[in-house]
Image 1 (cartoon, helix red, strand yellow):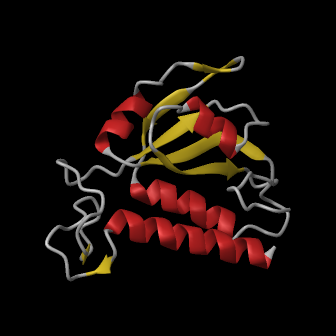
Image 2 (image 1 turned 180 degrees about the vertical axis):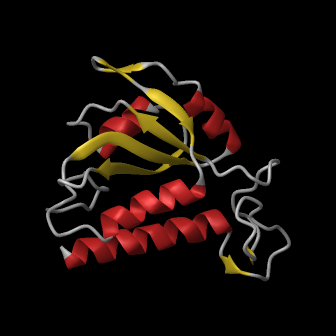
Length: 156
């Protein structure tokens, strides 16, 4: 399990670097959504300084995987999917989806009240703090608590 946590943390760091445009300072453009001094140019920028390109999805089927959520948002630039886990280790029916642009955010929000199978889903804007709290809960969970999917190289 420790190896999986390390892989998740590495993936999160790569995602942050991609979104921030390469790291600390040095760039002409700042990633405007975070305001904590990261820059480097070329990262995600927003016309609204408070916008983080993420949504919370509520009402997910408990058997839904990260792949299922990505398919639900087909045609929208999805960067990451995190499925929340209840204290007993089971999926909570909620998740966060980080998107690649303001346009992708608007496309995801347009999926509000659509169905995944027999479940009606609510899709609404999420803050960076909410997303990171969900990631932290998974990374710090006891071994075996998280039964989510993974990327192309995921092995269980």
